[in-house]
Length: 235
Ligand code: ATP
Image (cartoon, rainbow, N blue to C red; front, top):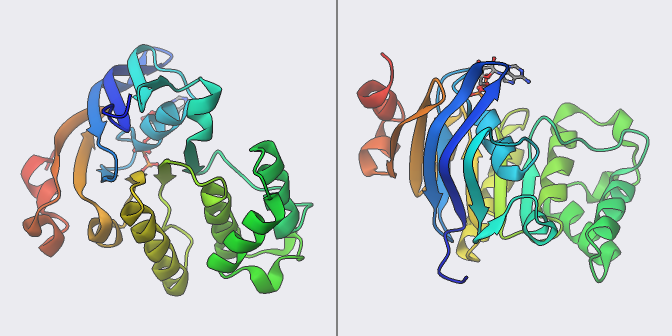
């Protein structure tokens, strides 16, 4: 299985009622690559990420993570998700949240992992604070810590830079860069093209549920984040 793609989306359709939010989507992310999913509001980015994560079921088609089915428990453990659907518990402290997830993931030393990621996300000083009292940015940092906690091989990130201040954006970019260097695979949706294109090795543009462009991230795109839209968008 080592030659399998990290993420393979094969002819995927997703319907809400009879509305096709994803229409025959084919995408591949190789191990160690970073795929930026771009597209206008409602293009289907969140739906696609949630379907890859196994939270939502494809109506047609198939998704594989390193050759495994998304609903397979081992496959689930290999993914980390940041997005709207996944939250942290308000009535627990930051540390308690991570300890809880660390135990769920059956980490060998949940406390050490929790403290490590609290430190990496700049939350060590507030680790005993209740999440209920956290700002949006602090919650987002905790969501980042949670996603990295179990050292997943594939990171699925839905608008990860939203709600982060500039310093937290820099922290997340460093973590993501390290993840890529360590051979992990990232698929992220974003409106913040500039931040995303600094990391992306590949770009996919979704247009009303269809892939309008999928290819390597080029110097033209980095120089002008609007380039892909101008060339392949709806105009
Ligand atoms: P945004 O950038 O605004 O988050 P997106 O590209 O992530 O947009 P999706 O949220 O995946 O797009 O939505 C794709 C389409 O599916 C939209 O037309 C949306 O209205 C519709 N949709 C999404 N979730 C549901 C749902 N639970 N029930 C019905 N329709 C939905």
